[in-house]
Image (cartoon, rainbow, N blue to C red; front, side, top):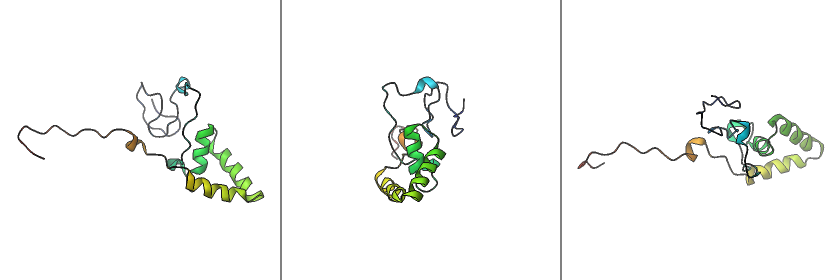
Amino acid sequence: MYCTQCGFQLRDEDLYCARCSVPARPEARRRDGSRPRLVRVLSEKKIAGVCAGFARYFDVDVVLIRVIWLAAALTTGVGFIAYLVAWMVMPKELPAEQTLPAPAGPPAAPGVSA
């Protein structure tokens, strides 16, 4: 099975994609009703990943968020300042490799030091 968002190969028991955190199945939505963490998504960024982070948080298409943000920036100017503030305040998303524990190396032979 492959992720519909990024194409990453999933195992049959995976509920979420390890690379982009998209639910692998409709029943995999958060059971407690909470939203995902608001982070800058660096894998889908155009400038800093702010719009991609908001799109994932609100579960909408990133293009919609970018159009709304651009309209706010061009019409009122607030969009530019809000984007810079969000860029500084929102934490970066940790890559999937950093969120998983590191695999243990092969065991050392008795009497051999590393």
